[in-house]
Image (cartoon, rainbow, N blue to C red):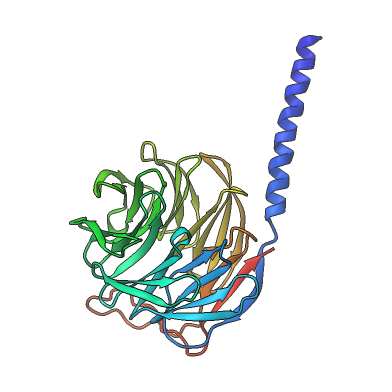
Length: 348
């Protein structure tokens, strides 16, 4: 009789766990495009960054960052940075923001309250990814043209050092806020573990199941990084040993990944085909379930997540015919149709 009671309780526990997981997935479902925010001006774009605490969205657009109010969607200012503006990193405790631009390579420092420019610092050529590490209070740029990492003291704006001769195409970064920065090497199908203080490569991890690793975010509590692979998969890597513990198919042309620790949801924005935001639920650190593929727009490859509302912001524009390949540009991007740049808001 006791054995039967124990079996019954175990069965009830398993059923409760299944119902909880099912309810979580149902609650996370029914995502769709709920709003489109037009942004004046022409030219290309790159990353989007959300400051959920400060209620601002930083949208790169050609030579500037357009700043939107996360609650109203209204534009509240602009920050001119330079040709080929890439992205922004926010240091709220310092009251500063940082913008990377390929002009040929700089970081613009600005005041978070006034949006006024504080200074401009030369880094390596073509600084693509940019993050702020709270532990070291350093800004890290992935200098794609120079094949290096630059670390800048966020308080003083002075260069703290570099990690040189990486020998490949540097892409997105993430920090565990415990002394390490992780960097995707897109053309080598590897991820590097870097010493954020000593500025050196600690480990190189091959990603055999990941073609052209691009976007990255991190689950610090469970020590996992989420990597969007341009070939059409997402890969989850255990940062304690560098092992790929899970993969899932996504669209091609990914260029953004976001993780929400409060909900356990992982987001990837892919611009290939019709464009989509793929949303997964972290059932456990090594198991992920597809919640939804939300149709966006062709070329909508970058996004940001508002951790307060759970809404996703995706940069888009109408695109003309893709030009023919030429030396140095084997995969040229399609031109932007003037007057079509905007931000899609994806939510429930």
